[in-house]
Every structure is written in C-alpha cells, then in structure tokens.
Length: 80
Image (cartoon, helix red, strand yellow):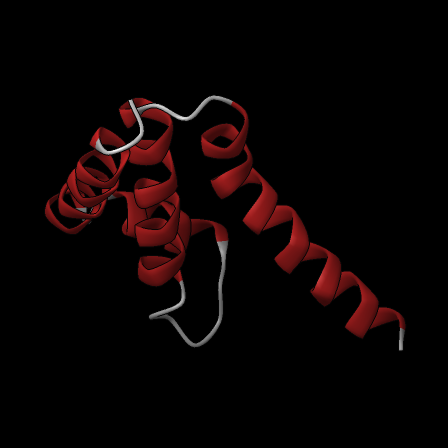
C-alpha cells in the first residue's frame, strides 16, 4: 500500500511540474516547458527500469525532446 501511494504521488508531482507553469503563466515558453516535460516522460518510460543513467540517456534524445518542446511552443502561441 505504501509503495502504491508513493507511486501515485510521483504521478501527481510529475503532472504538477509539467503543467503548473502553463496554468499559472500561460505563454509559449511555459507551454514549451510542458511539451518538453511530456517528451521527457515519454523518453524515460521507454526503459523497463528507470535508473539515473536512463535520465541522462533520455536527455540525450535531443531531437525528440526538441520537437516535443516545439509542439508545446506552438500550442502556447494560441494563449499569448
């Protein structure tokens, strides 16, 4: 039960980190951050087990993360 609570709290925290800036300060940059965060989650979850080196590997997917970020920026253009 405790592991499940920690797991669900991690989901809530990740969503807050990704989306709260766009909710509080709607602008292309904050939406770009949301896009980047979504892309990072996607890249990191491609691994079966997540370790510290997997974070570096996910950040190394610069092309994918760039396009996730650009998607967020484009979405943010509609709110500015």
